[in-house]
Image (cartoon, rainbow, N blue to C red):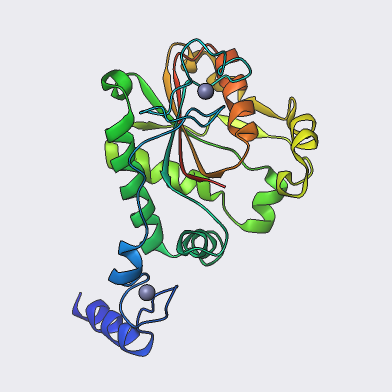
Length: 237
Ligand SMILES: [Zn+2]
Ligand SMILES: [Zn+2]
């Protein structure tokens, strides 16, 4: 055991942790940079973005018309070149474990704050899937890692029930093209169809943009007769 301890000490000495934002030798994110990352205190309607305390659709305005999920809970505000973006990039490509732990803690905090009381019963945590081809390039689906650790932290069931056909990268397309590109591209794995009936779902993604991907996932999940779908993501880009 002490050998391992010594190795860790030497590694820490040789490669001290540096803040990914200001490069101060402290931690993956120094206290000053961490405190500038604001966790959002209220949610918005996923459609029209009016304030809606827990991220549900506006009542009586038909905002939910084209959506298959019931609620969207976000953790941070997102814009380009911010600390959050640097964190996400580091999480995706360098895979820093400490960032994963930090993200999972924030996801847990926001979920417990904004979800309904009944959301911890009969629940399955599901990640937004990545196509096999993309996994081959990236090495791992980071939404799956977040979802797995989030479920573990809250003692909930985790199940990777969705799969995704390989289509053109959503990020490179315009809004309308994204919708057609996505249509019928995400499915529930047949062996889980009966398992999902009547379950409440927490669908996890890192950054959602137009919500078209999480909506396509939700369409597939609702076809498998799931009950309530809460989308939980780090931010909306
Ligand atoms: Zn810093
Ligand atoms: Zn609305």
